[in-house]
Length: 201
Image 1 (spheres, helix red, strand yellow):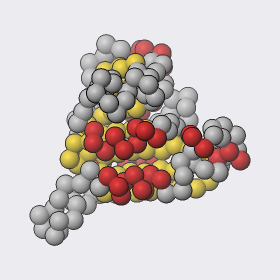
Image 2 (spheres, rainbow, N blue to C red):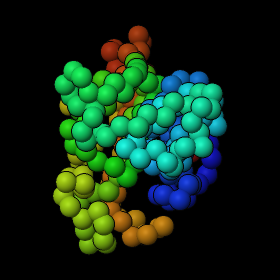
Image 3 (tube, rainbow, N blue to C red):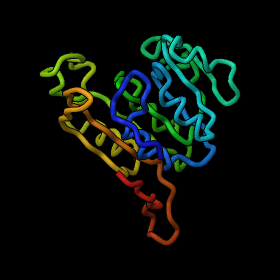
Image 4 (cartoon, rainbow, N blue to C red):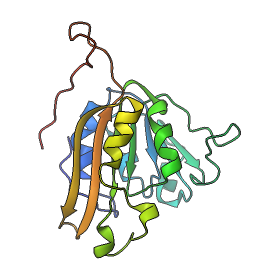
């Protein structure tokens, strides 16, 4: 695991994502949704994962185009990628999906279906209350209390870790974070999912 500060859009991977990245199956394909500057594309690619990096503006990952193991997909996640046939195909199934600092609610229920069995969803973005600290401030871009937990529950994901609350660094913000797995049943646990080792905080 790479120790990094949380929430730095200038290139450092989120500490939350870096902590739970080892849960993604070794060498498994990863989707970096709304990849921005590609900090998590670089994290996972550096760890030996093939990565599909998707964003409306792919200039932040232009240096990765053509690199073995990296697919850069320019797409409007709020337009081109629809729930209807004919939208941009996000591919899959994936061993891991990463979303940070981005929220488009129509995509939320679609994400678990892009995971392979045992696949990991790592999600971290702003939540209600962040408007006290600045942008984003519109409720359209702020998770409601427990919203990621509800997503996991409604789509059958097994929650490994969840946090929500106010942080001070690298700047004051209100965030919500989820690490959840599309479960693999454990034969000796009465149908409960296979437990995952918890990485050190």
